[in-house]
Length: 149
Image 1 (cartoon, one colour):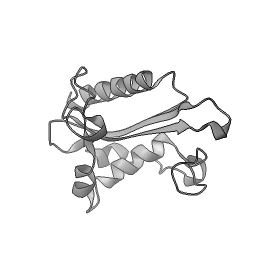
Image 2: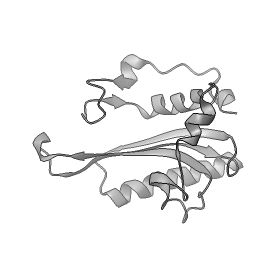
Image 3: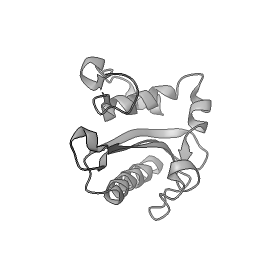
């Protein structure tokens, strides 16, 4: 189903959607667009590594960094994903705090089913950690409901 949803779409342009400074993941200048990440996730489902890759992801409401999330929205067991945050050290000239937050995921049609929707939410300078997680969880819930309809 994911492959069908990406047919006819233009591949992401790495020159405009990916900026690699040092590959560490800690420098804020390293950037990838949400579209690029979602397309990568969608394409991963068609590779020989798909099963191992999805097995390595946290399950919303059940494991990893998503263990305590998604219960209120009803997405427990229906979303696989990876979270990420970037805290600003004082050395970058900003007040210490959350600089960015991301959630890149697959929505499943049923628990332990095949991925149906791939998406990525990235926020720069969210109001708070709680607000960032709340928005990410709302997007996951909306897309999860759409995936099973």
